Image (cartoon, rainbow over all chains, first blue to last red):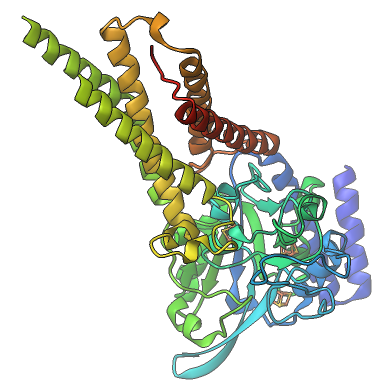
Length: 326
Length: 148
Ligand code: SF4
Ligand code: SF4
Ligand code: SF4
């Protein structure tokens, strides 16, 4: 009853406004509401985002929405920074360059990468929203020596800015070098700022606090082209493959680093995009990435056998020596 | 008997050396303090290398510890021969292996440990490591043996 009432109200308002955009945004809002609802009830399966690159117009709305939604998480460093030893330790200060949007920084967790490509003999420009991939088995989280990063059971990974010491190991082990450091903030200031630590690392946290409230991430909600879709892994993978088939396109992120919770679909092969994008500091590549944690996972299996090997060796020795005794 | 005892000692000492180095290598300190610049120690700043080295050393250590334990039981060597420092080191090693084992599980795909649990594990593992280093150093200096 109530549902019908709401629907009719909405469609009447849309009709009265007589604007396609209004109708479009209503559809978007209701689909977001539906997605948000499924997000809160969906606990077991990781949440995955699908990015349809062919739809992105590079308007940067998502970039600004991310900055606005996450502004209160940004670092407010104390200056002057404490002197750090030895002198090779780099000071990384982005606090006066907060408006940089053409790369990842501690104040910009999402940026738009530009690529040009030739499709059917025609030159096209593509824009690609880039941020943390939210790997299935994230090396940044798993290899942090302090446990400053966490992966939630919905698959997102994030850095706890109260615990991070800014050693930048997460960035070094990340196949895309995603996390970015700001010097002069965080726990290290209360420990031995001259000799250990160097600030706090920052990256996309998939708007975990919005997800907790049943809202979708800011960048997804604001996009006028509905470039991103978020949902349970199996559903999104199905959608991604259907979309790729439909546009005769390509997929990135499904198998990279053993699988990520970010799936890009593009009409152009990613090798081609990778050659065209500007990559370097704060600008991640689109290379194929092997599973960085797989050696560890395989050795973990060997570790299970280790006690058995020890027992077998002891029994073997005992058997031999008792035979010798006879 | 004597030679295997010596061999065990060497394996234990070398494993302890590598497991400690690779363990400290989990923290981003060797590069900062020029240690990884020393010839032959560059690997200490490569996090995937230290990660794998730590696992391999752990496999050797676990195998050795279990071997010695069962060897001891099978030969009925007598628990009363184990010295005080021996017992202390056994307790620390057990703590290290259990906390380390849990961390290996934590690092497997699709395993989500609570955030506090991970921090506690990290600190407990590091504390056991420091304890073992101090007790081992003490044992070497004061010539304290495992068994009397
Ligand atoms: S808001 Fe949407 S269309 Fe605009 S840049 Fe971001 S993803 Fe692309
Ligand atoms: S992309 Fe990098 S920062 Fe993001 S989860 Fe994977 S390893 Fe971590
Ligand atoms: S999910 Fe949230 S934090 Fe991540 S890029 Fe989008 S808006 Fe930014």
